[in-house]
Length: 272
Image (cartoon, rainbow, N blue to C red; front, side, top):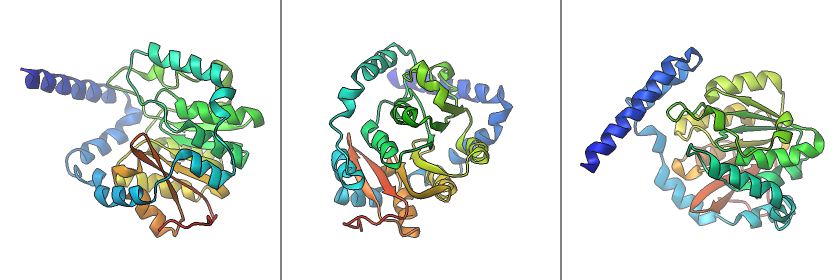
């Protein structure tokens, strides 16, 4: 009985999502890509997963250690400095009727912006807006701008809740593009010539990552910070770093792995 109930729920979600796509012609290209990904290329999103998880586990360190080694900064002040803002953001998440991705390694993202004295930051994937909040807390000091790419939450009718933890006073530093990366990123790249920090947390497929990584890497200035969440889903991040001869750190965070490097910077201890 539970199997049938779950199957009906899944079919209902798929149908609701498909109908929502049909109502938005601007999202038709992404609909086509999803159909191909879920039929012809069903296995490709997980390409090289076992290899990369073994590699990541062998070199992973803590968020605190990476921030200290890469940025020469201490993470201890972040939560106390922004305690009131973070408390209100937590309350906003609890009030939200739509389930989205939770808070990630906020300190890692915040101190990447502080280290680069960021003016222009790009992120893919917003959800509640925890990573956006971390970035904006830094950017506000320099009147910088965050450019975000995020797909509408079609099956959950959750568009209005995307970025809900971000306070209103920080939104003047934020430009949000509500399309898939392959449509959002070209629009953003027409506006900005280079970025100081890039945070990736959107299309988790192998080919989706590879496409975005290459698009953005060439737009990062020397000394910019590149961060990618959930790199253990497949080997895209590891393969990209190998092809580009990039020395990278890996952060273990709540059972998952985050990749981070500074462009054209060689750390004292090279990851292999």
